[in-house]
Amino acid sequence: MALRFPEDPLYQLLRAEKVEEFNQQKPESGVIDFHDCDFRGLDLRGLDATRINFSGCYFRAADLRGIDFSLSNLHGASIASAQISGCFFPANIDGQEVFLSVEKGIRMRMRKDNK
Image (cartoon, rainbow, N blue to C red; front, side, top):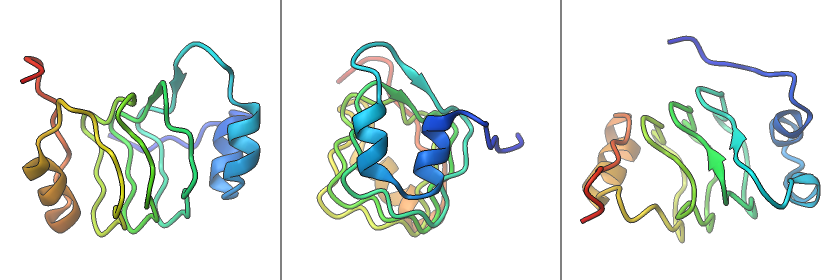
């Protein structure tokens, strides 16, 4: 799988770490599709991650502290060595998946049964 670097203006705002601008320009409805995108090493603190498809994304060494991912799709995303203090992850991703992704770089798997 090759990582994507789309020309999407919203993606470019995040690549430039302009999180506040991104949050202001983000549409109020619909899903933003950032699947398989590269967010490695970025400071994304303060991001409104609601309704964003981050499936397959790489967040290696990114600063994700305090982000609420509970309404995001993180299936197959990797958060190796990321700073995740205060993050809220979707209920269908086990804590062990998050731990293994941070420590070993595995891609997180979402449960389909919502247990």
